[in-house]
Image (tube, rainbow, N blue to C red; front, side):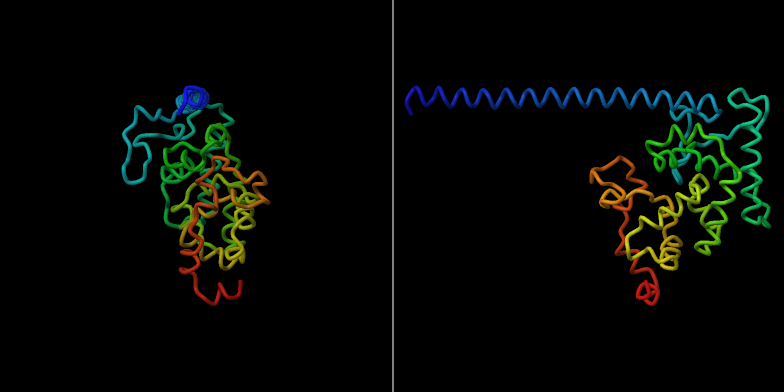
Length: 256
């Protein structure tokens, strides 16, 4: 190889190396920016939890069985003196607690603390539920519960799918934070094999968190861009539909 050819090869290699280094720096800068944004959001969320009375994640013992924070709490029996909430907000929480009790037609004397634990999950105050709510978690934790919406959601479970409300709420308490429209959209966005109400009911009885699947990254209708939108815990793409179908009685699947 003559000197001229070697020089051309060297220049090409140098150009490739320069592009590689530029791309590497760009990735590094993007990663740094993403970490800073995450840190900012985390601090904002932590501050919100502190204000509302839920203990910050770093200072709580984690219950290994369910991922919740041991000792994390709802506002004290909606104590009016609680500095993080107004009297109106506390009244809303107290009313919602009673709405859940009434909606479940509670005849087993469910403790207020258990209902409050469900509501904590419904409004993004536990580690497990924060994973479910994802990007919407901060807004969710700042929301004030509306007893009428919670009541309508419980009614939807029984009237639309004839589900046992208590079993669903116990297994998937986040359902108390979903409106009837969101619950209906989970059925509408479901894969064709599950869109029959009876089939969907059986699927939900096996996997209650299907009620929270309001996203499908693979569907041109619900996600025209076709890109992941960062709500994986609420996306149908992560559901093993074939396994669900196998667990559903064959006559129902055939009818659908």
